[in-house]
Amino acid sequence: KAGVTQTPRYLIKTRGQQVTLSCSPISGHRSVSWYQQTPGQGLQFLFEYFSETQRNKGNFPGRFSGRQFSNSRSEMNVSTLELGDSALYLCASSLGGWPQSGELFFGEGSRLTVL
Amino acid sequence: AQSVSQHNHHVILSEAASLELGCNYSYGGTVNLFWYVQYPGQHLQLLLKYFSGDPLVKGIKGFEAEFIKSKFSFNLRKPSVQWSDTAEYFCAVTSNAGGTSYGKLTFGQGTILTVHP
Image 1 (cartoon, rainbow over the protein chains, first blue to last red):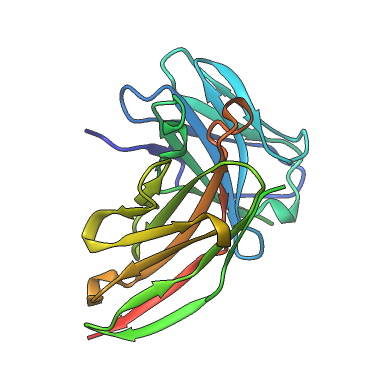
Image 2: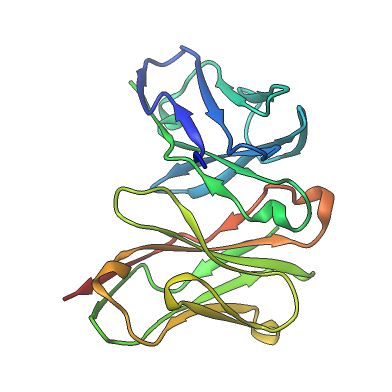
C-alpha cells in the first residue's frame, strides 16, 4: 500500500509570494491533516479535512488555507509568504473516524524556505 | 489549551540499557495519547496509542507506555534498547471531545534518543 505522498519535497520562495503544497493520502483514507514543523515551535496543527469539508482548524492566520478534493487529495496554500513561514509542512492521513483520527500516517513533508 | 511536555531533549544510552522517556500533558478532560517516532531520514510513524482500557499499552519493536491518569503522564519505556532505536520520539495528545479534535494532535517538543553500539 502506498504511503502518503507530498509534493514538492523542497521549494524556495521569496517574501510576498504564495505557495501551494499537495498531498495524496493513503488509499481509503478520507481524512487529511496538515502540520507545520519548525525547530522553535515544533509540530503545530494547521487544519484537517474530511470528505472535502474542513472539520478542524488550528491557530494560524488566514494566509494559510487548504482544500480537499473528492478523491481525498488535499492542497494547502500559503499566501503573502513571510520569512517565518519557512518550515517543514507535513501532511497526514487517517481513516477519519473517532478516535482513529488521531492515528495519523505522515508523509515525508514539503520543506519550504522563504528568502 | 492542551500542552505536552517531554522532559528530556536528548537522551544518550548504550545498547541493552533500559529506556524511559517522560511525557506529561495538561488537559482536564479525557484524552487519547500517542507516541510517534521519526527514524533518521524517515517520516513520522505511530509507535503506540492509548484510547481507553488497560493503561499499559504495547507498541511496535518492544516499546510500551503506561498511562497514569493521576499524574497526567504517559511515559515510554523499553527494557533493552538497540542501536536501531536511535530516533526522535514525540509524545502527542488529543482530547476525547470528538468534533473539536479531529486530526488535531498536540505534540511535545520531541526527545532525541541516541543509542551507542
